[in-house]
Amino acid sequence: MSMEMMNPALLLAALFLATFALEDVATATAASLVAEMHLSPLPALLSVLVGIILGDLGLYLLGRAAHRMSWAQRIARNRRLVAFGAAGPQRVATVILIARLVPGLRLPTFVAAGLARVPALQFAVPAIIAASLWTGVLFVALWQFGVQAQALGSARWLVPLLLVTALLLLPRLRKVQA
Image (cartoon, helix red, strand yellow):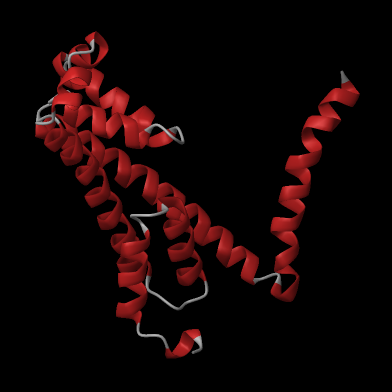
């Protein structure tokens, strides 16, 4: 089935569901679909953003629910986790922002926030703001990159190839210069 025949509602639903597996890939796919004019920008962005926010809140709730289990209660008594739970809103917001930006930190940090019983609003507000900022910036940057790549026509496949090649060669060039 060609993209022109795809139902936009199905594409949006697929993007929403994809965020629960790979957020950045879902965001990049949404931006690509917008750049190729298969979807409108606002619905595409909202579909991934809502999925990402629900995923973040789900991780937090997973930690809250795990607190009832004996093994999780032992973990929750860890002094660092206790300190995280008692931290003020600014500290929690900083940790959440860092976890959003650094790959691999989101899942353990958001589950730990629930396990440490960080108050729900103290977690949710910065998590929603961080997700909105990160997703919005990534989406717009990739969308605009996609629009510019469209102008290259059939040669646009060279752009990622050149980027990957440059990334692989950059460390070697630094060694040669040193």
